[in-house]
Length: 164
Image (cartoon, rainbow, N blue to C red):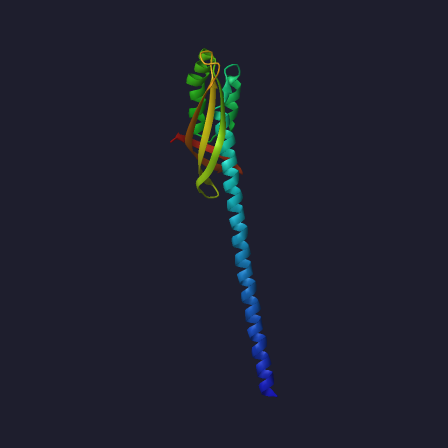
């Protein structure tokens, strides 16, 4: 009878170890899944913010350029924001008014080059349709840009835009 008791204790001990190990493995895998989902959600949010913000940065009408483009700057990180506002004031607004430019930029494709929870690099493929008093029928041009994004208070902000 004591051998039976010993076997029962061993079986209970082994069962407890297996259950504990299973719970630990399940917990680790659950955490990894949750972490992966958060990372994927963050990547998707960075791409969406980059697409929306860059399209707004490069889209304007000569009649409203002074109010449209500064709104896009609300989604830019400093010091890029300051540089962009200076560019608007000194170059884009005067040129848009002089040539009566209307520019519509759309994102055709986007992808993440690299990302973590606080920083992302996104590649955007843009199409721009530009009309002017000299070219009222419009011209279409494509471009690729590398966009660096920084997360601030749960918002993705554009930190730089580099043509490729």
